[in-house]
Image (tube, rainbow, N blue to C red; front, side):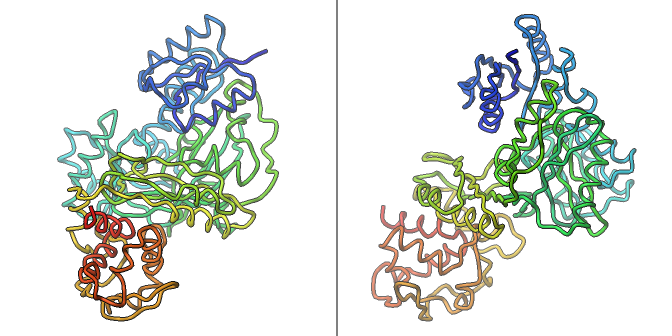
Length: 523
């Protein structure tokens, strides 16, 4: 008999689940607060309902059950697993309990569950706007020392999440986190040192079925920007077992019992510790893309089966490849053009290029994971091949900015900031160096003149996307041949006489800044 499901969210990240349900011949009723949600056309019926409105969703689910029937409630890569659980519970359908879903959605409740069960996780305290002035006292009372992490209790994508190293930055970080919190609460917790991993599982029949474990690549403190992930993670068997055991203990502490579970777990000097666990499939292209690419397992289909009371037919991998996802980012400004998509897609082992920023978009250096400009996904039989393909693809894509923009000018006018500053410099170069080019250097196709302080860094220093300085200049000249004069060994031209400005822009803002300076000079 044809199944009918209620899908919460009709955005890009829910598209995989909607297509999967359609392939099964199921009827899809989708809801989303955005009436123009990009995947609404994949649904048999669409209704614009705010996913935060749990009562409205529950009422709508009951109306579906009473008028044609309802077999399951589902979401992927959203914050609304409580809305899913409430609607499923009201209709007598399979899923995590509403209580467990709340435990896995509210970070304060989550930490309290872990503390009661003795699951390794950081010491913490919660604050709202009224109690925020007493936050420092709360930390001292709980023996929490700096650095700490401040984040909203109920958001995803690293929105409002920040590392705080001293008292001076605590209040503004709390204010920012509360601004991103739907409940008005922030959590302040002890910072966990160490690499971070994403773990995915399906929970049913009283068992936890691990489905994926990926390295997360986090950059740009004090923010936590994921520039990509690689699956499977590269780990010793001992560390792998430690991460999985801690993750499973966390799932049980939250009470998650039927459906997907996704965790962020750190491997600290004291052992594995849980960052957070959500009662849903992951976002960030893992559950819908890189995990099935690497293993051959239809994880989304298996989770859909669970939501209608079926057991997955198989979670055995058909192959053991590596899949890598990487992001490209931008300095502040307005997008003039984006080029290189075809070059990126043509690379061996590339699977997907997903742009987020387009002509006319306002871009900034990211402070959360929704402010990146796009993502490249690759898959290969060897880890190094997959990583190289994804990273080379990101380097192929060039976001060119409109000239004479005040945001771009402000970014470049700040000069070099040095290690630890935010936004960071494109290249870590010595502060206070002279950018006047004085030393001859041979590129692949032509000779250039390089500031003496950079000569030893030409092939070693790398920007945010992994380009060396030499590669940046070669790519810039390939895109805009008129730039050859700016870097020429012969400094006789008008452009070359202003070469120091190009070198300074390159050090601060990389390829984008060089092209921006050229566009400003040439109208």
